[in-house]
Picture 1 (cartoon, rainbow, N blue to C red):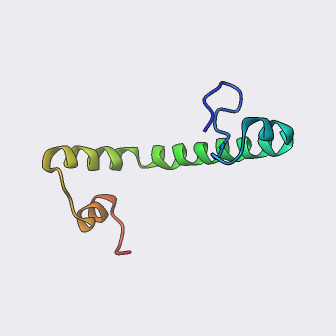
Picture 2 (spheres, helix red, strand yellow):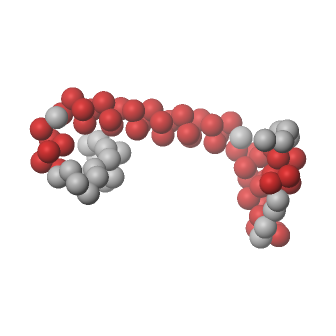
Length: 80
């Protein structure tokens, strides 16, 4: 992961040097755009369930461990 202000989400594996990524600017831009889009989608999903997630976090802080059934009940979803 990069940590600069320009393309902070571009993945950089150990086997690929930074100079190699710089050679393919279009690929770097596409990867960065997809990662930004994925981050936005994740934030939207979490934001849509914020109250439920906060309730789960509160319950976890009270009891330390909860079951999958309890989580599903708190999220009001069926088995699976």
